Amino acid sequence: MVTAPLTPPANHSEAPPFYPAPMQSNRAPRRIMLSILGAAALVAAPASASILNYVGECVPFARAASGIQIWGDAWTWWSQAASKYQRGQTPEVGAVVAFAKSEALQLGHVAVVSRVIEPRTIMVTHANWSRIGGKRGQVEQDVTLFDVSPDGDWTQVKVWYRDNSGLGGRTYPVHGFIYGRPVGGAKVARARPAPELTGERPDYVGSLIDAYAR
Image 1 (cartoon, helix red, strand yellow):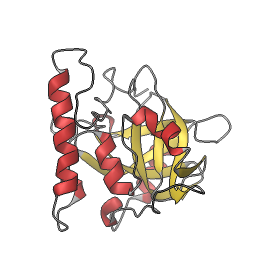
Image 2 (cartoon, one colour):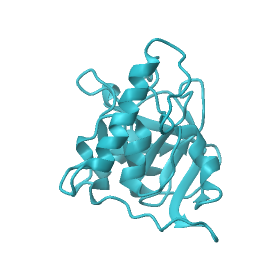
Image 3 (cartoon, helix red, strand yellow):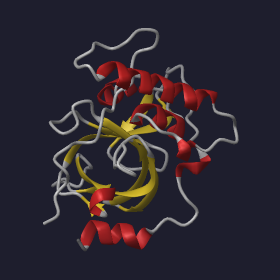
């Protein structure tokens, strides 16, 4: 059986604006600086720049790719969304998948739904998951996310991992999906996903093979 790597995906945080997050190791300042620089790069990039060239944490990328305006560490997105955006257990293109805290993902994770293939198989575009060229932080477009929850409610998933060339053996807990539609009374605009959220010819068959045939 192919298993997910013991080392979980890297830090899925976003440093608070104007002041650093508490430092827990001598690597923390570097992580904070990378997060700030990554977020700034997405904000300052010219209109012609590709979000697929982003390198950094998952949070600034998910915000830019989905248009959903939430800040803070990935694990906080689900609770923050309650007063801003509609939430649910059904995948929709442009929605943010909000991963819960877990032993493997101590800061959670966020990814953006790029394609819905069938009720339990979707594609996501996200940053800072697989190692590419031996490094974390890069963007992966249209990769497989598979619902393995007993009730089919997307509370447990497996994620495509480049080093395995398929789904890993690890299961991750998920809160659900954050949609770009504001809740009543929320002072946020309807989210508009980035055009590069999905590719022109995603491999639907490959995703189904990832989900059911391996």
